[in-house]
Image 1: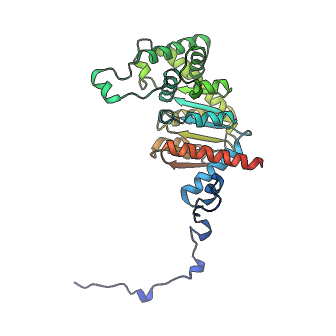
Image 2: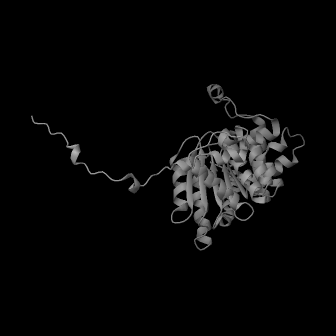
Image 3: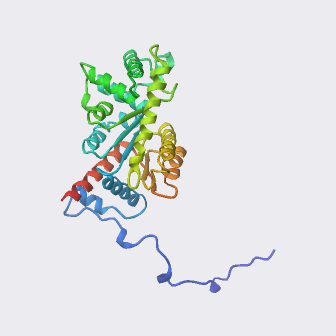
Length: 319
């Protein structure tokens, strides 16, 4: 058997000056210097890959603040990792213009506001059939929905009224739902029947859940035109429900508004990369216009980093 070695002496090379480079020395990170401020930290980040994407999202939010829609969609893990104060602050600063939550986020938010604790041991409760069977959570939330159906309220609005009228809240200052309502920021809750612990409760009404959550779906669709030409959509920790809801709400908005909104920035920020957020938040909605980003990391680190960076940009713009 004959073996033939490639003749490297015949290989064609090119001058390095003609070769395009993806990374340049000017884009490298900088170590801590005399200036230890947060702004200096941001300026010290490398201008490559996700660091570049992160700052692009920050700049998009800062540019949209006060002029365009900034829709933030929140999954349950974001609430139970203690990030509500960060998002409430962004609502107070009039950065967030619409807050959308899945059912899990609303449950954690409700329990923190009323009793100051949430997130049970699922495995232990599943063994004896007590998982998700908290009497007060299920009754309080479901009765709020029944009333909301009667009054013509959305699910988020129904919970806000219930919390506002509760005499003894453990931590009203930590409730996304309550503070959004008080700050006049639309807050919508998007239920998935059978997927949330309160649907197990004897007080659950499928009619009330469907009516109030569908009203919130329509309200989300009504908020999306404000994204046009410079708005931002953030998906924080919802792998399935909110990406699916957002895609349908977006097609309603475009159907009713001659193809708008377009030209907005979208970003999925989660601990893992999932199919639905990638397709339904990052790629499909920005196809042909706008820009979508995926930034992967733990919520308890990435969400504060994002918020602090946006505020740094906003305060820098004012000076």
